[in-house]
Figure (spheres, helix red, strand yellow):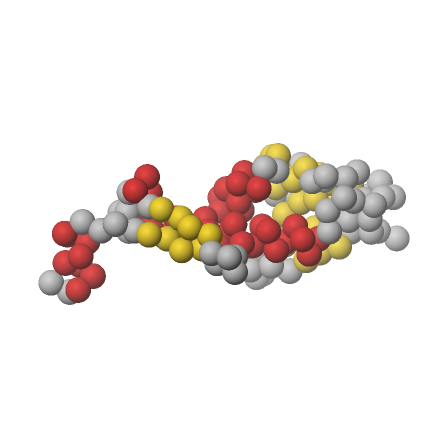
Length: 137
């Protein structure tokens, strides 16, 4: 019997997942396999090295279009809830940054501030052309 657990997510952008992992200080690589306690293996799209005996991974679910988190968390130093909470927080941050960049915002001018409640505020300076576009001028 396998110890692999699959966690359904809403993560659709693998580049944003990678950016979030970098922010959190996790090493990862594209592709590869992960192993459970019983040495069963599973192919993954992204292999993540977490504290503990075994890496976890993300696997693309073709039918839903999301990347599911898979792994054997038994005996690990990180809980799956703790990992997903941190990752989801930073993933959302990366999604906002990508959206701003697509809109032509210079990210080097954007200031991020984390509030005591954990929410993140983005301060985005706009030039005159961007202001005109926003107000429909």
